[in-house]
Image (cartoon, rainbow, N blue to C red):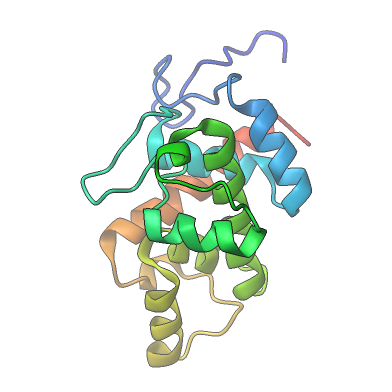
Length: 173
């Protein structure tokens, strides 16, 4: 887009902090198409999870651009038939994006296309979201981010949805 700094953080307005990185764009565009996920959602998740740093490692052990837990990644590898999975290659940007995008698609299917619930599950775990749905009588049309019990998850969902909106403005599909 002419006149737009592609290295601008759309939330803070500052340059080069958590930007939509062209380096990983081909991978998340490819896997978004394969797994039928909005590529802007994938980009927003990556921004929130790792700020586009492929070497990111959380204190809880989540790995890479999409901050996948090793156990989840191993399960994903089994689901998609990737026999070459190892913890070491989970750091590879292409594999990490492939697994994370597949997982987003899986969560969207599980939560009937509800991005609020899918993103909450990506952050807090699908078990927590299923429990909240049961305990609080949430339906699949749930959209009240403020009702999410975990503050970190509320903030995460808000951030990702906001970033996706900004990316859609700049990078329409």
